Image 1 (cartoon, helix red, strand yellow):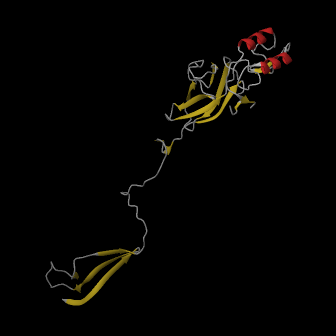
Image 2 (cartoon, rainbow over the protein chains, first blue to last red):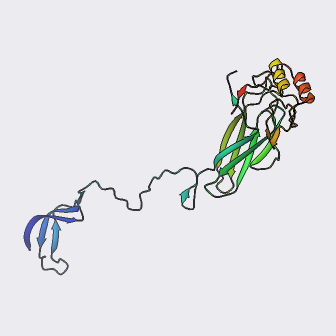
Length: 95
Length: 150
């Protein structure tokens, strides 16, 4: 039995699902045809209400690192701290 | 530093990967470092200046981490003056001979190893004597780098 024609919209955690125009009825009396929502359209429209970036685990994160990565972190090259010369090197002057 | 004299070079380095470091020294102009292994301290004979050698002479050090495999290179410039060029003006001449004469007879020039306080001690034996004078005269008109005190 057709009891109502309406636009059904369901919102959950910032996202709304418009199920579209349809009919909520009690069914035709056939056990296989129980009461429920009978959509007039088949499209389902999902509209996020914000521009939030969703990381679902399948999106690779592009993190820039320098050098090889060992034990979970980037490894830096060695650094030369001092070079001492004996006898002391003199400074070049204009020739 | 003077040509044909022993030069000692020492480097300190750190490895963020906390591995063992190896040192590779490459002096200019065919000089050979001793010991030949991967050590932080080496010595070599300063090559004589010539038209084929640059002034200053580069000395390159490559430090490699045995753990990460990464390396760093550093180059220092060594100014090598001609043996006997006491005033280090780029040529051995009469001015150097005058300086030697002023220091002639000095002894105890080496206050510590590698620290010779007599600039006219040409043969680096811790005194200024006839041997130094003979070497200077033999090297007269030899050219090399010019430099100022560090």
